[in-house]
Image (cartoon, rainbow over all chains, first blue to last red):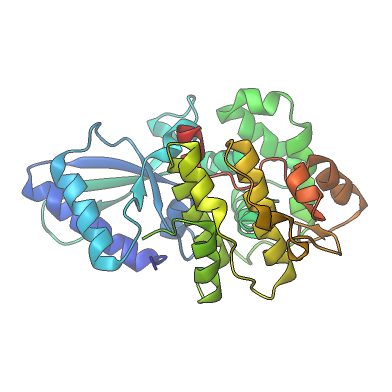
Length: 201
Length: 132
């Protein structure tokens, strides 16, 4: 049975990738999205089961494939815990300005081999709003919590304001926003955000 | 290791693995399968009953839905009575007339026929599009 992981475990895995990169004379830039980005940089998400990443070299260098496999084996994580499937869901309108440098790895004084980026608060919100999986039979409650917390963190009050953020990154989705508005109003009335949600912390 | 079959997914849930995680991993396996025969095998064996009526009906809806969507064989076990709910389940924390009507209309027939009312494309995963 493979395990979910928490923030400390993921940071330790990034240390290991950073060390492997350093040892091979490389510096890897990697953007992390989804639940893992929230787990790394928010105060309201605490576990994830995989890491959605982008910006990796194609194909992966052998040292990265080996490091990811070793990490999975040592920690009993899924073999594809580090995966790029999210790439097709990202915004073509997003640029480097829509990402924040989260940290460099390893976290020791050694030369950094891995630089991790996360989406800005508004880009993260837009990604969640585009997918809007709030009624998925199993993931729905977590998705709704994430959206409520991100909305509160942005200070946006209304569904209309949220759709404006969505339009900045996914104009086609936001061009006919009736469904998003309906669902957002429901999500906003369906539960409470955390007391002081922050992203990034 | 991810579960290879829906039945194994339910065994893991019964053993204590969180439902969301077990399902997510199974879906990644399923979407990554190359052919219809492999997808049929992943759904063929009936999952054990959990005692949670919703979860047991969800297994039937899931196998029926995924099989039809991906042209795999719909297993006969999905039609057992224990794979249907007597009472409606709207997959929202706060049911109400408006949202219930929305879910009634959006729910795929494999769910609606089992009294499960959910979104129009349940079980979306980042891995899905690349496998479609």
